[in-house]
Amino acid sequence: MSRVELVRPDELGAEELRLWADWRRADADLASPYFSPLWASAVGRVRSDVRVAVFLKDNGRLAGFLPVQHPVRYVLQPAGGPLCDYQGAIGAPDLVPD
Image 1 (cartoon, rainbow, N blue to C red):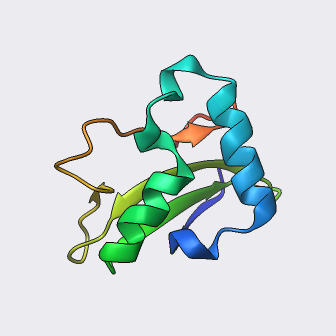
Image 2: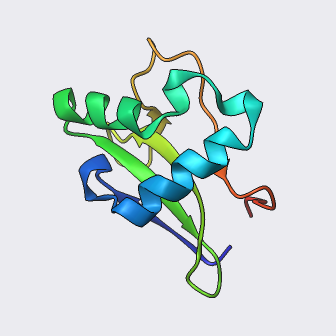
């Protein structure tokens, strides 16, 4: 992986949302609604510190997503936590975080 960008949930485009949905459908472990971009968007509407970490490969292609809250500098928490009891990266089957 080359880099990670933090973006607001409403800044994700149609292609990113399509990939997110495809990757969720391909992995039964991601069936919880907490792994949905709709969850990240809903929490983002009531919390100004919600971001989606967008994982990008060296060639610039999307590799995955991780919805988080960024309440203070150097701290990331699950988006919607502590209500949200599931968190994990949503990504391509070959996603291996560095």
